[in-house]
Length: 295
Image 1 (cartoon, one colour):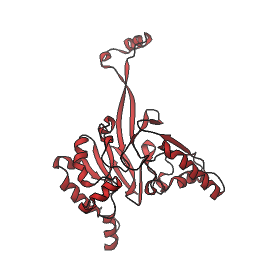
Image 2 (cartoon, one colour):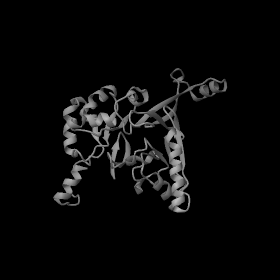
Image 3 (tube, helix red, strand yellow):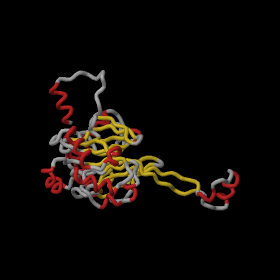
Image 4 (cartoon, one colour):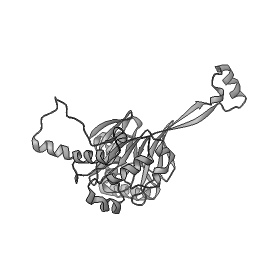
């Protein structure tokens, strides 16, 4: 598991396309996709499941089971409405296999619908361009702010206005973090709350030129799509996920720097990049170091 701090948000997880994607924001009590349900995410109450492919969803049953095993209240998997019933069927089958149920909540949602995570924080779903029933999610903080016309009034004046039935506050939404799940470019890039997000966890699976057709066929992002995406999303910081072992990480980073404009380099990073090794880091063999770089 890798830990990154992304626009002030701690992200813990792992993401290699075709193997496992699980990206948790523990302080917000959410995890984007469940991967194979590593122990670090079992205590998180809300799984925002982007789609049903095995590298993103294989750990659903284990997640519910482990929470029961350690005595935690049932967790919640939030998924496209059309997948809610199949996941519940999966849990029923595992109940028959194990001989006892593993309680859990499966919540179905759809494009632009919200699920409350806690007071003042919601997850808004949106359709992405991948397989049927695929969703991205944006964490949105909701606040109340004093309307501009009442700025400067003292407390007694504000109380008097409220007693008269005057609405002195307005709702403010802050898009904190967006997770695209697997997707190709598409209409999701035009959504205001995606464009206004402080940070985006963005799938980018393919980096080699000869893989362009594979990206299109599987509805994934190819590195050559990044300039268009960065132009459509000029403000958020972008962290790339879902790279694969087809192209080693160092090569991926060099390709990204070559493809995007210099002004965008500071706001684009890769989640699987562990950064420079510390001087006191544990020594590894050359073979192990090569494997680590490949991740």
